[in-house]
Length: 334
Ligand code: ATP
Ligand code: LTN
Image (cartoon, rainbow, N blue to C red; front, side, top):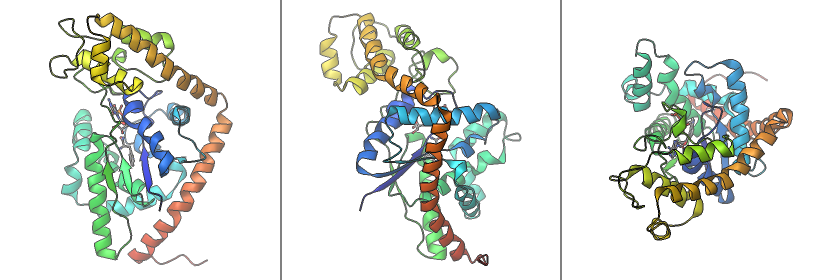
């Protein structure tokens, strides 16, 4: 049987960044070769914090366009938008009712995000975010969920909820494995290379965006913070800046750190930056151009997402029906 996998990235910015690309997208593209892959855009998760409606609409399209431009094939994978499949919200309610207050309160992402807005002001949606995520996953009975390190706790909760439901109501859900993709190189901010590259970074200069112009990408790499000393060597502790540039190079060029250290022996940081800028532009430039092309025809993009949603609903419907039946909900008469 072909393994099923499922994953998603929030549409919380106009562009994905190099960390999203190398840490998530590249491994998704690999997975779609061998797996029955479901990739979606969790727009309902995005509204757990205030969003500008027009901007959200646009960001969902932009995220979809970037997935496809990077190599997600909507014929091969099921690509859809979360809010197009009502079963997510329906199963989320059931998951909320299986979760303990204490258990939900221990989620570190909730603690971090609610601390930012002051816990009195944090929306309840932030609290129930992980239960919606559990629903996203369990609706499709995936064998595994490839996500970054930071999502481990949510997948762990999903496993617990699946086991709990199965125990209470009888075998219903597949308990999914968590997989942190190997290719998932952790990419750091170009300006503060000890912090991970993140959409919510303080300065946009440390963020290498997929949708940046060639010129802007090259400029950001040229002005990346480097370290004391002149030697080009991978050493995360002593040389976080140079090590980050080497990680990006290695992930894109396929060369090992040893090969790169040899290649750049006796050369200056500037050489590494020039070479890296070329590689980045060569790889990401066409992705951006393809994404822009797709965005030129929003009706076609929307139609493609509608077909994805149809496939997703067909997979989700019987699972939700089974859950409702197990819970004892009175079936609506035909
Ligand atoms: P935010 O800053 O809003 O938290 P983010 O930029 O960290 O967002 P997410 O939407 O949380 O990105 O993550 C989407 C995917 O990209 C996840 O699988 C995550 O692990 C991966 N990812 C995000 N940032 C990096 C990074 N710097 N290096 C590698 N992978 C990353
Ligand atoms: N919380 C995730 C996005 C997300 C997700 C999911 C990932 C929502 N639902 C289901 C995998 C499976 C994030 O912030 N990266």
